[in-house]
Length: 119
Image: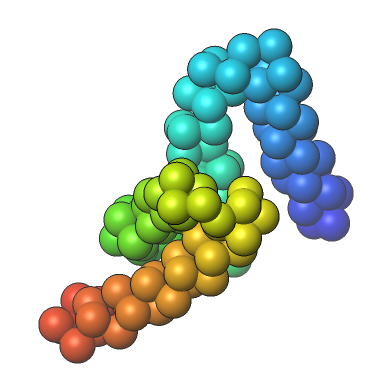
């Protein structure tokens, strides 16, 4: 069982390295690959094939990820906007990360208050 975990970790690492290497050659192609929900796909696959989790857990994860995708866009909106207002890249990056976490937590609270089942 441990070898499967190691194999999954190596596969996930390979995807990250592949995207990084492609991006060095073509920013557009690297971004296009990164824009695909590859990590989500890998997690869904790993959950579905895990005897302790299974397809039901994989579906729950995929559905929850879809709901939380929208507040996650905060980062991609704030990063360039804050830089246009004169904030440096790293400050924009940091504010974008913190704001994305805060807005995602707020979205979870809002969804729960509206009766959306999100675990």
